[in-house]
Length: 146
Image (cartoon, rainbow, N blue to C red; front, side, top):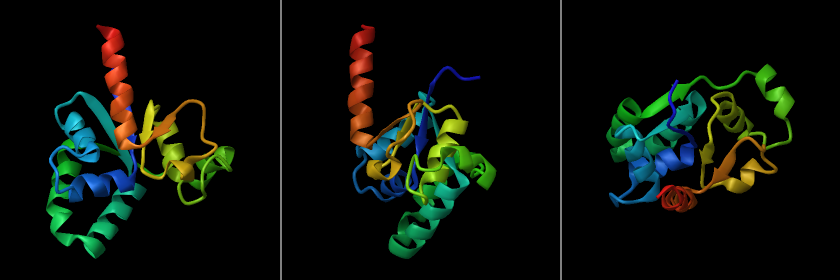
């Protein structure tokens, strides 16, 4: 078992990371942290399907970048079953509940998404935040470790 931070990455962050014109965007940097094995970046089959579909429709030239990131950086977990979702009903928007439950099932410390309002009221075992806010939190933790 890894002692690294476990970060669940939502489809919108995957999309932004793959399509980013900037090498230092927060979304892409999260995936790069996973690529150099500083964190475990976890996502679900649902998020992969959604990202692939949206890239094909909106920015097909970013698909090879996404495929590279998928192969090199992401741990992909199965989407939760209906039975797994039931105890968590009401903790997130219905469409995003499988993302929250997958993150909880994988014991992730963080769920990174641009749509934090979709994950309210949320669950006390996981912190839901935007990519830039994730880096602010990590920076603070590193300062306290010194």
